[in-house]
Amino acid sequence: MIGLEFKEASVIEEAYAKINLFLEVLGKRHDGYHGIRSVMQTVSLHDTVNVRLSESGISMTCSDPALDCGASNLCIKAAKAFSSACGGVGAEITLTKVIPMQAGLGGGSADAAAVLRAMNFLCGCPFTVRELCRIGAKVGADVPFCVSGGTALAEGIGEILTPLPALPHCRVVICAGMPPVSTPEAYGRLDRLPPPSGDPYPPFAAALESGTLADIGKRLYNRFEDTFPQSAVRGFMIQSGAYGALISGSGSAVFGLFPETPAAEKARAVLERSGYTAFLCRPVSGSEVCRNQKKQ
Image 1 (tube, rainbow, N blue to C red):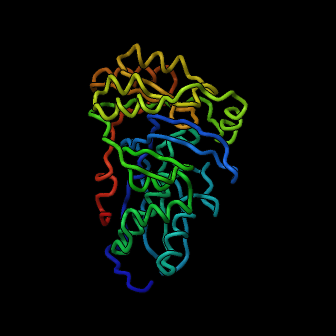
Image 2 (image 1 turned 30 degrees about the horizontal axis):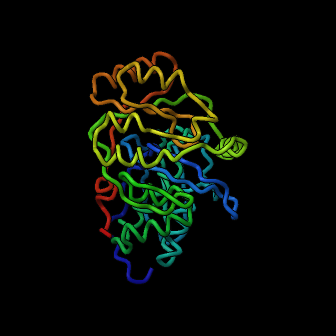
């Protein structure tokens, strides 16, 4: 732990969910992973991570007894990666779960990213956000984005990030409660489909650049829609005033982009009464995610 300056005994860090405004799967690579081109957006739905530094050892507890808190958990992997990078600092992690699991919302990656930001803050920020992203890439493909947050193009397997114009003011309704989707199963289904025709990214990028929510909503795209359509929920959101609706990641959660709070809240309430789990949230900027971190 050479050169570290310990700032606080413990810190609480929000672990923000992500949605995919655009997701194209480019094919299977030689290393077995799938290449992607995705536009990810941080939203205010979040888990909460409480981290306390210790002289040695890494431990974890969680509010959800169904979650494995052992060595395979991404929070544990993140803490070990940070410890390895800065000389052996330990951590006690307490995770409070809210983000639905296996829903395409990046909950595990968000939790790991929050652990990295928390440990970095507690140690006096020895790493910049960019350096934290490099540490996060060793933990999981979506962790670098979840570390930095905001709106970004993710390429490679998700670890190559390019900042993009922010999503304009809106309210985001997220609907979960559908049967969970295994990511390997979803990719397996996709591999059996013929490749799509045309390139949907340039129209989406132009819409995002315009800053017009209605245009962005029309250009939302997710290749996994062909394998796991949620047409009933998406159709309901559009009928309720959303400018666009889509599954997130490989599913099964669906999100809708609403211009104003009243229609969004009404849609969320109807979905809840219909037996789903629904959340009303907003886009979150990278500066909000990384407010306690050293700049690039």
